[in-house]
Amino acid sequence: MIKRAWQFLNRLYVTTKLFITGHYANLLLSVSIIITITALIQLLLIVLDPFRRSFDIQDISYSTYTGESLHGEFERIAKLYNTYVTLQAFNGFFLVMRLLLVFRFSGELSMILDLISDALLDFVFFIMMSCLVNFGFLLSEINIEFVRLCSDLRQLAILTSEQRT
Image (spheres, rainbow, N blue to C red):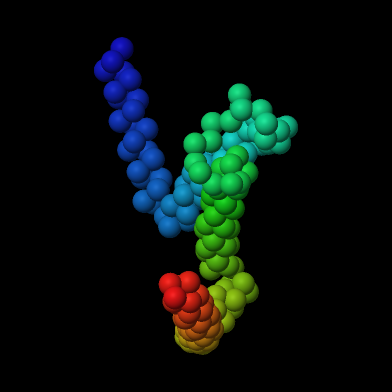
């Protein structure tokens, strides 16, 4: 009995390995299926959460929250939802990659891949410029907050020196 189970698991492993390494599309399909199942589990955790059904903050019997945030159970559900959305974003990326592989097989649709490959360098430079501009805005916001903090510290120093005298 154990020998047959071992043979079955070994054949399952070898078949899965051959399927995944056989073609790039199979790897994308396998990763997409795993992410979809994980996202479905996350969605079920969100939907079947007892707190979400009642939103009763006073009911401590359902609460398993141990953090110190003011949001309590809402924060836990928000983190589950954030994980779900992230998984779906990665799943969408892998599905788009599979769609691009479908374009490769058709002669007429392969022009789309040629356009994408020709515009790849322009797209990379666009992303770099976008990051550079956003980094500039980030630095200006940090500078503004630093100036505000320094002025608050000066006012605090003035208040504390007045209280000492």
